[in-house]
Every structure is written in C-alpha cells, then in structure tokens.
Image (cartoon, rainbow, N blue to C red):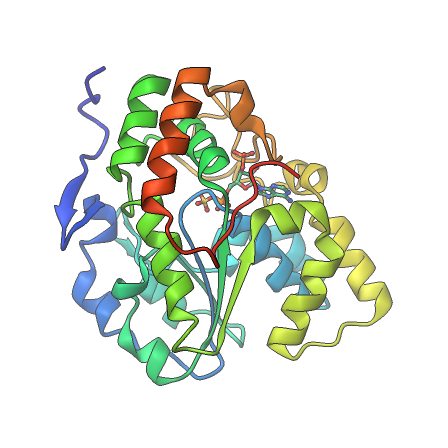
Amino acid sequence: MMDSPSRPKLFDFHGVSMTSSFTDNWETVQNFQARPDDVVIATYPKSGTTWVSYILDLLYFGQMSPERQNTIPIYERVPFLEITESGFKGTDHADQLPTTPRLIKTHLPVQFVPKSFWGQNCRMVYVARNAKDNMVSSFHFARMNSYIPEPGDWNSHFQKFLAGKMLFGSWYDHVNCWWKKKQTYSNLHYMFYEDLVEDTGREIDKLCSFLSLSPSAEEKTRVMSEVKFDNMKNNAMTNYSAKPGMNFEISPFLRKGIVGDWKNHFTVAQNEEFNEDYKKKMKDPTLQFRTEI
Ligand code: PPS
C-alpha cells in the first residue's frame, strides 16, 4: 500500500528512522536546559507512556485544583520534548510549564537524549513493553493517526517492525540501549508494561520509592482507581479524544490495554519468523520480556 500524500515520510536520521515532526527542532532539543528536579518519562512509542505519565502526574499534582484535573489533557501536563506540530514546539511547552517538577515525555533513543538531562542527574523513568504487543499497538495507532506514516497492511507493518524501519527506530535497539544505560546511570528506573498490568499497586510503590514520594494510603488508592484502563478511557483528559489528527472510529487511543493481544494478530508463520529473529537480536540474558502474564 502506498503512503497517502498527507502522511509524513520516514527518513534515516543518524541511523534512526524519524519524521520531520521530531527532527525539525533538533538543535533546540539537543541544547535543552534540564533542571535537576525534572522527571523524564522515556519510552519506545506505544509502551505505556500515557499510563505512566498519568500515574506520575497524579502522584505529584493529584491534590491540586479539580479544575486542573478536569480541564488540562495529559499531553498538556506532560510535554512531549522533541515534537514540533503546526509550529508548536515541545521544548517551548516544557519551558512554559507552570508546575514543578516538570514531567517530560520523550520517545528518543538513549543516544539522542539531550546532554543536559544527564548532566543534571535527572530522574528518568523508562517504560518498556514486549515487542509483539508493541507491534500490534503501533499498527492500530498508525492506522488512526494521520501525523505518522501509514502502516500498510498487517504483514508489511510486521516486516517493517522486524527491520527496525519504525518511527523512533528499532524497538530492539531502543529497549537494549536504554537497558545498558542503567549500568552507568543510576538515576534510571526501568519498568515493564506487563508488570504494570499484572500489579499496578506494586509498580506504583516502586515508582514512589524511586522518586522519594510517600503518598497516603487514600491517595494511593485514588491514583490506582484513576489510572485503571476503563477510567482512563472514559476520562476526556487522558483518552486523547481532543487531540486532532486521530480518528477514533478507526481505533481508539486507549484500545485494549492488555498483554497478549498479539495472539489475535500474528499468524503461526509470523510467530515463528518473529521468534527466530528475536533470538538473534536480543542477546542480553538480563533483559527479559513477557508476552503473556
Ligand atoms: S504513545 O502514543 O506512544 O504515547 O502511546 P503509549 O501511551 O505509550 O501507549 C498506548 C498503549 O498503552 C495502553 N494504555 C494502557 N494499558 C493498560 N492500562 C492503562 N491504564 C493504559 N493506558 C494506556 C493503550 O491502551 C495502548 O495500548 P493498546 O495495546 O493499543 O491498547
């Protein structure tokens, strides 16, 4: 299937497939001045960014005015650092945030993260999701979001994913390079989408411990309730319903929110091809993903 003319094109950018929306503001992004208390939420796209953004937003700012909770969408509370959309820059958005600490979202591979974040020893939360479900989620997202390249049919999306020809590059490189970064940078909390699905409370406790937060039992209960899939899906501030460019009739942003949906998409042959290829690319025994829970 041909890309429609209105969809952006992927191009090679220092070895990573990108679109111009994420490279147009490159120098400003690279020179971005981090603050020591900034908290970065880093992910390969479709790994649970919005979920963890909302958890952190509630942990930090859940006690602020109901007006904030009811009127400011999550993507305005948590700026997307590298995006440029209709002249609107994520870096300006971050610089203009009225709240502290700043929660900042990025999909950048670790080697592209602005130096200042490391220099300021900022806390980084990396969320990873197993490749099979990630591929399924990104397929449906690319079908419904006109700001990113079209996925083509399922099989061509599958092949592009294996070849690493995806926006923000190869999933394999992304999750591995961020994992390796932990060895030299201790202020990095690497977490898994599957663990969050399995036991959200446990993962929130780990996040709180990493961020030195101590919510009351009531606060934690409230956060856990607010961040449930159905509640986020029904909340106009977290379901992306107000975001232009997304066609929810094709697929909603909060689509299924489960582990194992790949089984409804992969053919037996694709699963075999995937597993063979996966073994070759994922050599580090310390980085293990679960494709079912
Ligand atoms: S993006 O566009 O990269 O920021 O997308 P991202 O937020 O990283 O990923 C979207 C997927 O995360 C799922 N999601 C959740 N799953 C379970 N519980 C909660 N609360 C939740 N919130 C978001 C969302 O449904 C997308 O996954 P799929 O598999 O497509 O449903």
